[in-house]
Length: 107
Image (cartoon, rainbow, N blue to C red; front, top):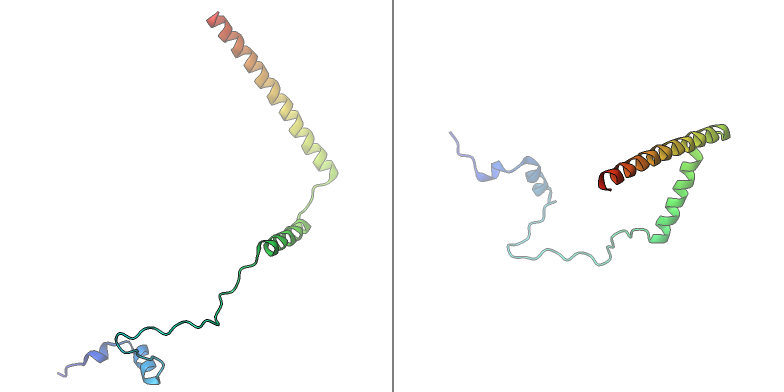
């Protein structure tokens, strides 16, 4: 039975890359090469560019909206106003009743 060397445990891809000269080994204690000063991270757009882009997208979305007809708008508005009046009357009656009841208990 043959004894395998420790090199045989390395992954095949690492061996192939090393053979091809793609992995450059640094001597122990050597520093990493400094990053190139010419490289700049891509700049993020400024406030003005982001605001104009946002407004352009808003206009595009508003063009896709299915707007209700005038009749639908008026009928929906009427329903909302009627419910507001009914709820306000109900709350007024409850408030009046509870305040009278509290006055009878206290006074």
